[in-house]
Amino acid sequence: MRPGFGQFKQATPEYLRFAQQYGATDILLNTPDLPNYNGTWSLHDLVKLRNMVESYGMKLSALENVPTQFYDHIMLNGPKRDEQIENMITTVRNMARAGIPIFGYNWMPSHVWRTPPKLIRGGAVATAFNYEDAKQMPYTHGRQYTEEEMWENLEYWIKIITPVAEEEGIRLGIHPCDPPVDDLGGIPQLFRSYENYRRYLDIYPSDNCAIEFCQGTFRKCSIQRVTRCKSSSLKWCRRRRCFTCTSATFLRRIPKTSTRSSSTRVTSICTVR
Image (tube, rainbow, N blue to C red; front, side):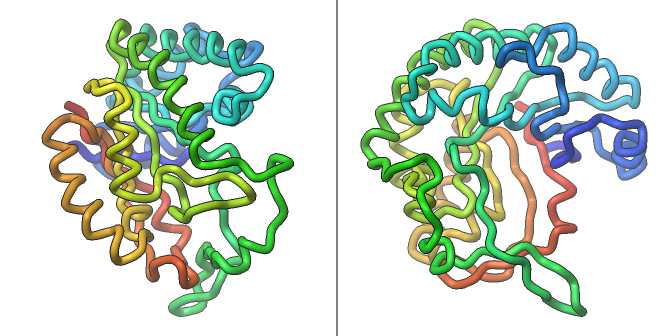
């Protein structure tokens, strides 16, 4: 396990120098600020990004997330699904050929949800989530989607992209839904329980189809869910089905209001096998 820095978009000299001084060996960029070429990222820009990181003596080990509009029709079976699949194949191939070994993404077309922030110890401002408040919010995509149609969309995608990842030698993984509740804005949150993680991993068993192990999200699971997820995560790591471990501190579990200090979003730990 190697220490890495993540949760920032731009590989600026300031961030990279700080990561270097901190002792990080690896960098994970979250939705890096790259030019959008009709829903794709170019090989040239990805190589340039990797070279920038390497110029500070570190390795660009992973990219986490592309803009949601790159693949929202894939997640929701929209009219541009096939076009977006071809574009995502191009982007994944370009990542691999640029020498970036890991691509993490999510299955949350409505993004990460938070409710108004809270004050915690010493007056620090923390992000927060209250599920009861969130349930009052309108549909984010016009209607209520069913769990099974979200699974059908995921399975269709996984069976197409995993062979591409195997061919190119890049590992792909999906981040847990954040927060890991049943439904947000009419969108079922698939990655919220052990059973759902297991179903996902069984779609296309492969070292190239894995999980991003976000400790904070696992901890936010209900008490019944979290115990099984924690024990299973060790098994998945041994079987090469987890490849990044992100550290964050949450104070309470859902369904009660959960809070997190914004300062805990700075660092990640990348496990590169």
